[in-house]
Length: 245
Image (cartoon, rainbow, N blue to C red; front, side, top):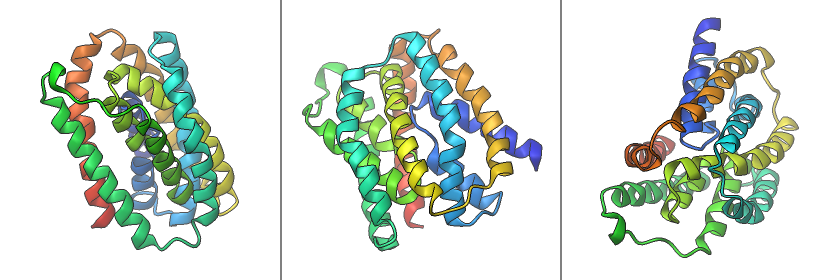
């Protein structure tokens, strides 16, 4: 079990940081499905586990020069308050309401991302810049209510606003650090962290998150985007379907 948790942490850390997310849904899947933690404990442990890897990956991205702080700061304007509100209201929101709202939103974002991937660059319609605030709010709610990383709507939003994949991943990771701090604070008071399980997954994810940004920096951003954009879209749609089944 020890080796399995470290190995899974490595895979999640490497894959998710390349997608600009904290990997909350993947960590939750491991913690609940394999480590058999309760939902409350899994939510707190997920944020605890993802945070160090997110910091390492963000620093690696910063060194590549791909971060777009103007986009990240705009996301945080609505994401941080939404995280606080979502954390405070999480006890009172019916699970079925939250589940379907997030699932429908993620599916639409994923579908739009895939559709955009197969359009010629000149024919792509970028979303209005003000939409960045909506994506920030949705991301914050995901972190606050369920302990997810919130990376899905952030990444989809940044791609639809015109950033390429390395830029979107770097900017998303910068944004999610602040959300993880706030979400971890609130969920720590509501659920116990499973320290041993969390540390094992964290060890693997730290290694994966540290090396992946440097590997991606060696490739043409346009080619990276061409490959990873549709993958990101499909992931969002699969995540949406898993929410409701």
